[in-house]
Image 1 (cartoon, rainbow, N blue to C red):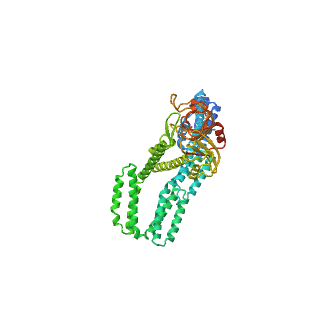
Image 2 (spheres, rainbow, N blue to C red):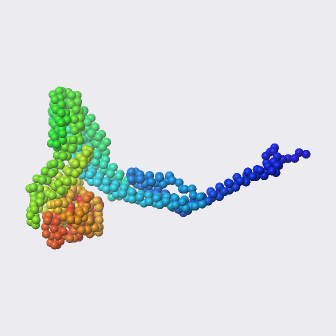
Image 3 (cartoon, helix red, strand yellow):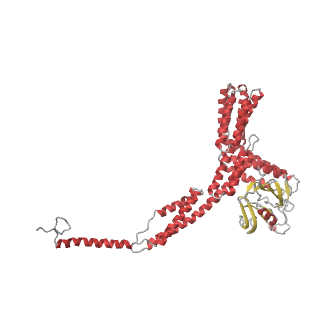
Length: 578
């Protein structure tokens, strides 16, 4: 009988010696595998509580980053944190045999760094919110100034005024950078639209002039007048630059249609074009800007006037002149701004020389319009002009200078007004109307009277006598927003000890900041005397030598007076100083 093999390998017979040989090879392999498993089990993952903390801190950091992105924090502010997080996330725990401490330390380091980044995110969110809030306030103020300056009897600005009103209201409820950035975007769009208004209104006026000429020549202008009225309505309801540009283009198109009706008036229109260009070149020269190129263009255009015979000739001629005007546009806006600033300074100097205060205490004679001179508002305007580069920059300087001149005129008028300080003043109303603040809460400060009057919806509520800035450190005329409200604070001198303007740390009970650079309305318990001429050197009845001069640019009030004012105003209150 044939016996079956007991070998594990079919068809092969392994002897006892062979079986020992196989076992000798398998057992060492098993032993090695066992040792490796033991070593691996000895490679611990560190303290699980520390790992959990690191995971939680990472999750908290991610939530903070997402929150920042959701509320509109600019990516540029998040860049550093995101980079550091990426570096941390790209690392791996060390391989530690028989010792978990390196792994624990690794996760502890991760937890700490994620926690630090989370703390940084809190600061970034706060900074972004504060910066965007301040920018939104500044943009709203610029829009308010632009609305006042660009007001034109030809076109209603009710639509853009509503944009200001709506965004001013939104500012009260805004909390996040996204909220404030949305306000800034809306406001800047409105400002850009307003900046296009003068040129568009000028086109409307030119078109209206042509229609009037046709009417004078007994031409039927019924359809032209209807189109003109529609154009004016489009301009009035424009809220975005594209709307204004579309209205402007529509006016251009209508002007071309009208052209066919006034061939007989071409010589007159040609001369008007040349005269307009000549006037602009003269303005550039007057401002001290090199006008050589523009004079050459003017001479070339003037040489073509006699050859303009047909409508097509006129259109080509007009296009050439318009191109020349466009070529000089930036220099022209710059020139207009420079000339207006020069006129402002000249008016301040002339009026100040004619209206002075002879101080009986020190024998010095001061111009009464010091807040408007170079040390005051004039310095701000000059600085703004010197920094201007773009058309929008010069337009803003132009707007600010026009408003400065308006404030100056009210100041000059108020100087000859005998109305008591505690009664409404015509100059106050003129300023409220100029800025369309009849429905607002407004603090009005008259520097010539050293008086403060508080209006609500155009009605005078209370009046106070104050002391404003000394001649060397005048207050700042203008329309301002409340930038900061402080209760129980300490003012520290920005001037070094030894300076005539240095003062000791001074506790202040109520302070309302109206202008950057530390300009406040605040209490001055060290003074007894307020009212006219206390901004000049005098002997205060308190006997306190520090009260013998005006302020450092602030507006001082009796403590009880400013306490009432502080309690009855808020961040939406407007401040008019003149």
